[in-house]
Image 1 (cartoon, rainbow, N blue to C red):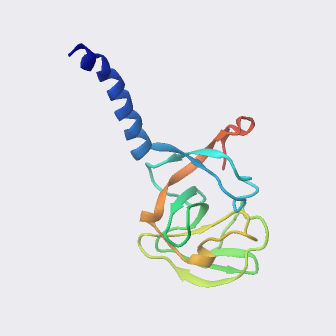
Image 2 (cartoon, helix red, strand yellow):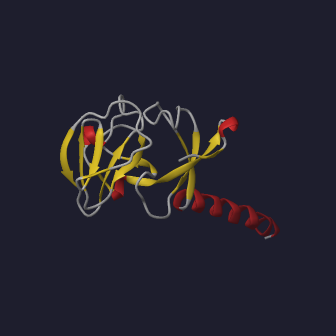
Length: 160
C-alpha cells in the first residue's frame, strides 16, 4: 500500500508528459534543406499541435505521399486560387509578397483549394518537394505549426 502511494506522483508525471507530447507540444527534427535559408537541416524544433494555421506558418506534415514527415511553409489557404508565373506567386489573382522564397519558383497553372486544403512550399524552391509536386494538403495531414528552435543551442529562438 505504501509503495503504491509513493508511486502515484511518478505515475501522474508520466501521464502528464504523455498527454502534453501527444496533444499539445512535442519536439520535431528538421531533415534536409528544403526550408533553407530559414532552416538549414538537423534543427530540433517544438511542434505546436494546437491552434490555427495561417499563411506563412511553418507546418509539419504527416502525409502518405512521401515517407516521413515534411516541414513546409503555408502559402495558400482554404478556398483560395494559387498560381505561380514568372517566379511570382498569385493568390486570387493578386501578387503575394513572399519574403521567404529562395531560388526559382517554377510556374504552375491555377489551383483552387477546397474547404480544408492548404498549398505549401519549401523556402528553398529549387529543391523542395511540396504542393507543386504532390498537390494540396488536407488539414488532417498537418500535425501542427513550428517556429521555435531548441537545438542547436546557438540557434535557440523563434524563427519566421
